[in-house]
Image (cartoon, rainbow over all chains, first blue to last red; front, side):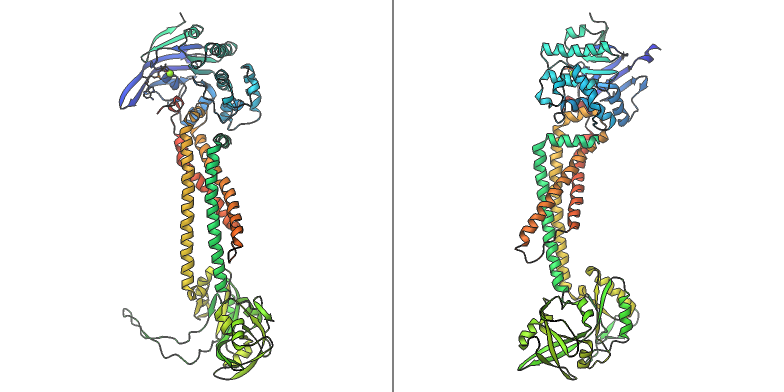
Length: 232
Length: 397
Ligand SMILES: Nc1ncnc2c1ncn2[C@@H]1O[C@H](COP(=O)(O)OP(=O)(O)OP(=O)(O)O)[C@@H](O)[C@H]1O
Ligand SMILES: [Mg+2]
């Protein structure tokens, strides 16, 4: 049972949406992600990539099948435990940065730590500033998100996803809204973090160049995995 | 802690909205305080006017007791009032009754008193008066003649008397003048040593206040009194205290509340309309807060989704919005009570009575406002807490 060592396992995941008619969007997905993995999730629009990412992110529950995090099934956990698990084990980066406009840049980065520890505290700032420094935007720590360019905002979002040092970061088209140059910068940040630490990344992307730089590519078509393996 | 910090940042971010609703709450609470203070002032004024010249409770034997002719079970009472006696019955063992009244809870002062009708003369003037005799200090506890003197001194020794402004005018009498007072039994000459104005025409125009002994002699009731006047600590408890006194002494009582039924009914219906106004103001405040928060919950769907994604529990999200309601209520109350109090001060100059913004009223406004804020926030807060984070982040629905 080598699989028990994986950080994340999905077993027969199905997901249906009830929208007048019942539509099954995911038809039995089995994948696993280990420590430090760098995985691209690709596929045509509507194939279920975001749906899958939300299930893995514990933001939604599967209709059928099991999700195990560090070998522990999550289906019976209550909201508080799920929330804590999410804050501690997972980082999120979305297509549009989704920063909170009422918080300063550095407060946005501290948010997951503040959520885990029940409040913003001055001591959390050091680490957040270090991350912003690594992202090359420490000068903007006290600015408001709207004062930053799209690429800079997305780098803040990356810093926010990494602040709690989660074993797995989920990124849903993190460069989808950026021009090629900034998108390359953001990708470099993610790849560097992956090579320098044991953080695993699951990145949904339409960018084949980016997918090629990952260790493993999972291709989804119509809610089913049609290919899984090294890029090529 | 986290919830309060986020609530504050949300309010700061939606500055215009926050300030607008804060203005709304402030106006509402100001109206609440202002109306309450006016009504309260008016009531205190009315009560003072009424109770300033009469006893809270008077204890007196019945003048003529109705006698039941039949008292068979199941048969309707038939009562007949016998022809009234020419004079009141003596107050049996009144000193003991005074002691018992004094020992009753809620009683702060008692005054045994003798009173009766008489005629007063001075020169050609003749007026029907009520002779009232009592110990000067005890009587002062019931009706404060000394504080309401317009001339002379308040003293009831020897052949001295004090009378009201109206009676003095009618008789053409001034301080130092003698007046003749004649009752059914006898006649005395009393010297006016003071003239009072207690705000009641009845008292100002009819009372001739003198010592207990003078009045007893004049009215032919040596050693006797006609009633015990009582002052209580809490005027609205007079009725209950009166019942207790009756039980202890066996002597009938009449409280100011029985004596002034109409006034009491008026005060009570005023209370009812104040309550209505308060409720409507609070409803308006609550609806303002609830609608603004509902709008911000919709506006912040994405942000709420992110909060949940980064590890903020439902409970915290709920608390974030409850805190916003509480802050609206608290800050609005602080500003509103200030505005209400200032407005009260401003119109007090032109009003005929004190407008009292009491600490109790401020405290009430504060608690009520904060509670309203939290309650109004509850539904929007629950909606925020129950948002499906995945859908919220996706931004659909
Ligand atoms: N909340 C929902 N209710 C009903 N249907 C949904 C819901 N969310 C997604 N779907 C459907 O599920 C399917 C998969 O959607 P999903 O967003 O996962 O695709 P995707 O692979 O992320 O596409 P894209 O590349 O365009 O982001 C789509 O057909 C979509 O219409
Ligand atoms: Mg998608």
